[in-house]
Picture 1: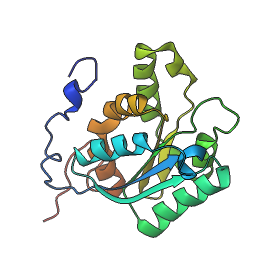
Picture 2: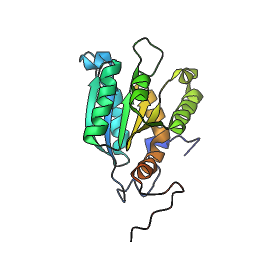
Picture 3: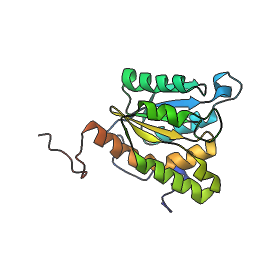
Picture 4: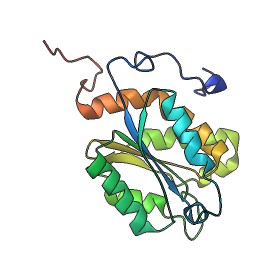
Length: 189
């Protein structure tokens, strides 16, 4: 790894990438007026699927919704509460445009934030382009579901998700209560 970036989009080896101990269930939520109307192919959501599968995640849901705060919030609630996935990754609606409301919808439904994910993704984005500082993406927990907002472009999705990807299995373990906060495995015997 160089400066926290994954070389050639390969995930560093961890016990989780081999499917041991943990199976992550995930959902992809693309927020785009044009994609929701079928006017544009959703390439960013496909990048998310590819990267999540690279760590062995099972994609349980894939949705494309318009840039409507209520629709985004309702989708996040349904996917988290009804499907009970470990992780929801959104793409789109995190900028400064008048219809960019994904962070507000996410803040409406999460119980607590995960600022480390937000900070790491923004820091890496800023290294690549000064426009990275314009991202308003947030991350947090709703119950036992980790929710992460990503930008809308496939390139930015790959760059930002690659930064937090190595930490996701451990985050899921912590949320599930499989390890304590120090990372020591609980004695199950």
